[in-house]
Structure formats: C-alpha cells, structure tokens
Amino acid sequence: MVLSEFQIVPATPDMLPDILTLEEACFSSPWTRKMLEVELTSNQFAHFLVARHQEESATQAEPTIIGYHCFWIVFEELRLMNLAVRESMRRRGVGRALVTEALRLGLEQAATRAVLEVRASNNPARSLYTRIGFVQISSRAHYYTNPVEDAVLMEMNPLVISSGRQRDRGFTLGGESASTDLL
Ligand SMILES: CC(C)(COP(=O)(O)OP(=O)(O)OC[C@H]1O[C@@H](n2cnc3c(N)ncnc32)[C@H](O)[C@@H]1OP(=O)(O)O)[C@@H](O)C(=O)NCCC(=O)NCCS
Image (cartoon, rainbow, N blue to C red; front, side, top):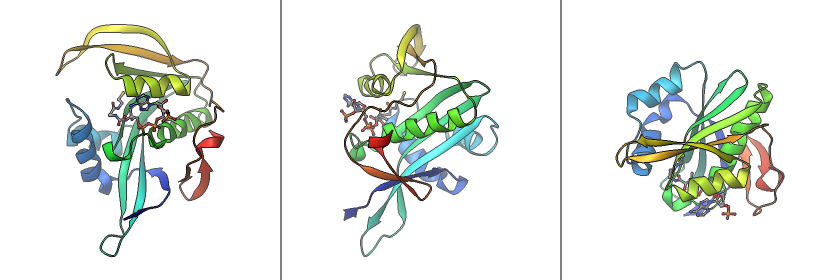
C-alpha cells in the first residue's frame, strides 16, 4: 500500500460510521453515534473536519479517514471538543494540521480565543496543544470518568497561528495544497 499526502475536508454524515469506529478505538468513554450525529448535522456552532488519505492499491481506492476534529465556534470563542488520529498514523502531523485548520477557521469567523479540556494524563495531546501555543490556565478535579481523572483547561488567548517550523509533510485543505511548514 502506498500512502499519498493526507487532505483535510469537512465531514459529511456518510462518514459517521468511520468516525464512530475511530472514536471508539481512541477513547475510554467514547461519544455515542447519536452524539456524533448531532454535532455533524444539527449543532449550529459545531464544525467537523476529517483528515483522510487515499490508499492506492488494486483493491481499495476509497479515501480512508485517519483523523477527525470536532470544534465549536461560539462567537469570540473557539472550543476544541474532540480530536483523534488513528493510532497507526500518529506523529505525522495529522493532529496538528487538524487543530491548525480549526484555528484558521476560528480566526476567519472572528474568534479571539481558543479553549479546551484534556485529561491530565494525556501527555501526547497536552504536548500537541502546548506545541501549538496553548497554555494551562486551570484544572477541574475528577472531571472525567472511566477512569476518574482531573481535566486540565488550556487556553490560547489571543488566538494566533504559530509559525513554528516542523517536519515537511504536505497536505491539502479541500483540494488546495498546504504544508505544515507554513502553519
Ligand atoms: C493527541 C493526538 C490527536 C495527536 O495526534 P498526532 O497526529 O499524533 O499529532 P502530531 O503528529 O500532529 O503531533 C504534533 C506534535 O504534538 C506533540 N506530540 C504528539 N504526540 C506526542 C506523543 N505521543 N508524545 C510526545 N509529544 C507528542 C509533538 O510535539 C508533535 O510534534 P513532533 O512529532 O514534531 O515532535 C493523538 O495522539 C490521538 O489521537 N490520541 C488519542 C485521542 C486523544 O487523546 N485525543 C485528544 C483528546 S483532548
């Protein structure tokens, strides 16, 4: 199998089964199908992006979803809600690209700050958010269940897109070329 560059596109309802599979593989308390469906179809504040690539083989030509990001833009606030990347595709810049595209859309819609909650023990996610420019502002004791754990609240205020260099991995945003070098 040859992996092409990944692309980031808005999620559509037909992607729900693949998104649910990824959700259930990535979280101990996954969102249900209904919760995902509401975010995809009827929450006016919600935005839903997927990262996908083309598996170029004789038997499969359909794009495969390798990550997704659900976030809300509520007036001046961008709220990161749920982010996941398929385990076999991690550390390739997919998570960072999904968050950066959310920041870009937030800025486009005049958001001025971004916020999120993350499990205290989730070092990969905390590293990603810190790398992008979020800082810890507080915590909430016993916020999560299964297992019970504190939440760390992180914020980016003002909302900006970091120009920090990272590995040269191209991807496309709805057909237009982009590169994590530029993000
Ligand atoms: C968190 C998650 C989305 C990161 O996705 P990813 O595509 O692997 O992240 P990226 O490749 O874009 O990483 C960007 C940067 O984040 C940091 N980072 C990401 N994963 C890391 C890890 N396992 N350990 C340390 N730093 C990490 C690094 O600084 C990395 O840059 P580098 O690879 O150049 O060092 C992914 O691990 C995941 O899906 N985890 C399970 C679901 C989850 O926890 N979601 C977040 C809920 S708040």
